[in-house]
Length: 105
Image (cartoon, rainbow, N blue to C red):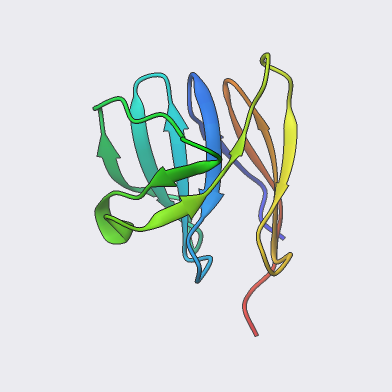
């Protein structure tokens, strides 16, 4: 289990790449990518690129990939699970709490 909090102001949506190695965040001030290995931000783009039909386009190590995202509505917190269930996030407009992160394998 990992106890992490990612400070991401103005969070709009989040989604994992297909390998669950990266987490894409979409905010009111651009997009960011975090490594799910150590929860460090590995890419940032300040250009606005809001989700369209629950999908967003990746940047950095997942550049150009179409990522399925969960969107926050009316600043209400949401819980997001990675496709395998390995990672569980609690997301609100001011950031993301990593609730559960199990190692692969």
